[in-house]
Amino acid sequence: MAEKDRNQIPTADFTSDEAYLSGFANSFSSEAIAGALPGGQNSPLLCPYGLYAEQISGTSFTSPRKLNQRTWFYRIKPSVTHEPFKPRVPADCKLLSEFNQSKSSATPTQLRWKPVDVPDSPTDFVDGLFTICGAGSSYLRHGFAIHMYAANKSMEDCAFCNADGDFLVVPQKGRLWITTECGRLQVSPGEVVVLPQGFRFSVDLPDGPSRGYVAEIFGTHFQLPDLGPIGANGLAAPRDFLVPGAWFEEGHCPEYTIIQKFGGELFTAKQDFSPFNVVAWHGNYVPYKYDLSKFCPYNTVLFDHSDPSINTVLTAPTEKPGVALLDFVIFPPRWLVAEHTFRPPYYHRNCMSEFMGLIHGGYEAKADGFLPGGASLHICMTPHGPDTKTYEATIAQGNEAGPHKLTDTMAFMFESCLIPRVCPWALDSPAIDPDYYKCWIGLKSHFSPEGTKDPIEARENGPKDSR
Ligand SMILES: O=C(O)Cc1cc(O)ccc1O
Ligand SMILES: [Fe+2]
Image (cartoon, rainbow, N blue to C red):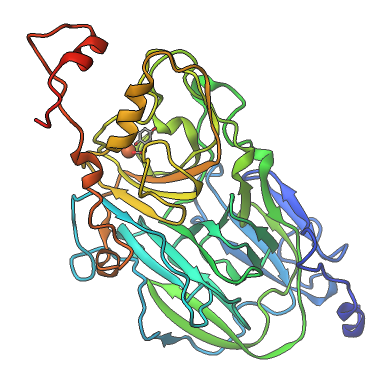
């Protein structure tokens, strides 16, 4: 096809719904121009329409077939066509991918942050990212980082490429319109998006001020959790995961910049064309989004409080069965029906570490102080649970609480078997809540060994001091 004709191929308008393919870990294929995918082989001597073939590998070539992830792109120019990478040192870089003693600290204290302000100065998604905590190392291909972002403008003539790991982005405020090499995704708060290691992407912010959370995992990828006795259906259904259909742009962009994150540091390389020049692709290594309202929650229907793992959306495994490098768990709207049960989360200490965020509404364990856009960190074996107000209100309601629907809520947790270290700017942040511990200080003793065994009577007649 002549160059002139190719330029006339209509491209999708970002303001209309993008075309998606549906499924999780499928072998997908997509063509923006019919016939652009070579038939019968990946790497023909000459590709249709004069395209270049290029593979992106998300697992080692020799990974077992059930884990192997790769995609073939058929693109106008190959990714390699760029000038050398140069270090990009922004004035105040707050990104980490190595969590050792030099730049992060250990603390067992319960931590909570108020929502951060979106900056006034022009800040795009990349410049708006800052690491909160993490463990391990991107170089050693084992670990994770938790970042947050606060930004107000679209990325212009630049694309980000994360060589360190996969991003799971949880927008809390403002939509993200994301162009990737596979096509375009429109992601709203209430949806999440996975941008796998190595994919180039660019983020537009159609709503301006935007904020959210990012979990980054090193050395593995997200999968759907096994369902065990739940059976063949439930939780996140594979067909609700949406992958972008092929979309490309063509033309001369004299000053296009690729920003590469590598070992937590940023590098830039110039090229004279958009990296979103993939006319067709096929494979199983892809970006995807998921609408959390599609999640089908399971829970107790008679008594006691289920462990939060019951609401796992995605899990990034370690080699130990059942031990996650990072679980993404949600606390969606749902019915509470348990009888003679303390319904909010139990008091607990966990060998895993728990980072939580709130997308909208309130969270059942915290009457005050945990706000949409805020965050908390309860690290390995640090005690936590409902605040005093939540405890007292639950007990005051007594045994007779009938079925009750939790509405206007969407909290989530990133839970890891690794113990995160916390970044200095997160500990020194004006958003940190220095009084967080006080939310539990008011919990009183109601213990009276001489009194009655009946729990309700004991509470009513026992001591009400703060022993
Ligand atoms: O700590 C938290 O709020 C998260 C959590 C919720 C729950 O319902 C049970 C255990 C748990 O860690
Ligand atoms: Fe917890």
